[in-house]
Length: 114
Length: 112
Image (cartoon, rainbow over all chains, first blue to last red; front, top):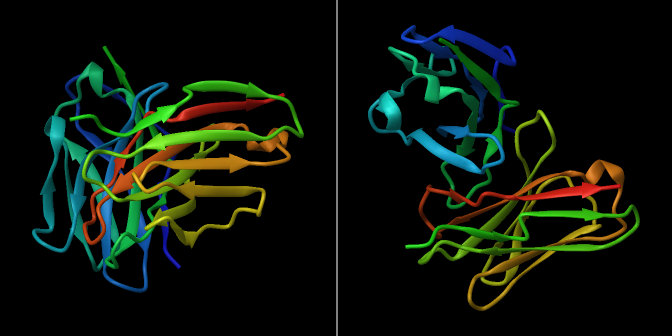
């Protein structure tokens, strides 16, 4: 069985500060890993994905994440937060089989202070 | 190119009633998955349809059922609604053999 742990439910940063959202996963097989963002009253938008190519993955809106197998982690970072980054962020894992289901973490709410 | 379309966007139902939610996948996609997102939680996998058959199912009771049509669109049916069924229901489409999912904006179901 696969699982995702996102520590902390809420992260608050100042505009321009580093954003770090943590994600640890558990999987018995090599995983694919994803970060999604959800704005209020909207669906999920893919930020970036790891699919066993480069371990440092760059996504949209300046976000990136690094896959660390030894730490079973896939933390999301952005060097400088913008007010528009305020949203809920979900880490998800799936195995590499075709069309396997996504297993999500509980999500982290990111607030950005002016 | 239209993405995933879900309807309705919101609805309110009474406990014990039945509801049907609809999803049109992204053009070119042939697989539809449904997720339930309770308030303050991450999405939970309900089931996945491919070639008009349920291929995978999450830990949801039989009150939750679905259907996929020849044009790849899908319906999610929930019978005997409970207050705990109140949630955002997300549809995600994908293409068999590929890892990318496209999510719709969801249907917000409120059971009173």
